[in-house]
Image (cartoon, rainbow, N blue to C red; front, top):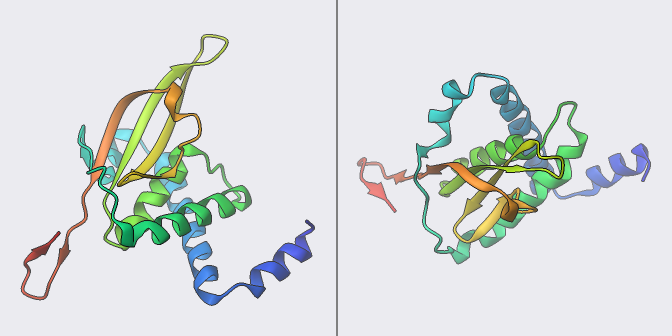
Length: 160
């Protein structure tokens, strides 16, 4: 598909879809910036270390999760920077946080065919994998970060 056709397709989308794609682009850029920082500086922002959120699926979030996954998959090839697994996982986590949806970010390692150490990151919310599910089975989890997002009402009481 040529550039003009892609631009025309973008402008034919609903406003809600355009905004989600724009949000994904911005979150991917922010995540790429964070990836360039020392991991010890960004790790606390990823959630509670060595913890996981529940695997219980929240049916009302299913559409939101699918839309965020699609937006990240669609936009990541068009960024001016590298948007691989860790960048996608961090961006997805930020998008879920904005919607008060819990998530767990996983970091894993494995050896490739040549025996070299490789790494992968993926993001899960409930039983749904938002990013990085492809190939995650061959990686050993070395770190996980639970991002539990609690909504507060006007009196400051926690929900959920």
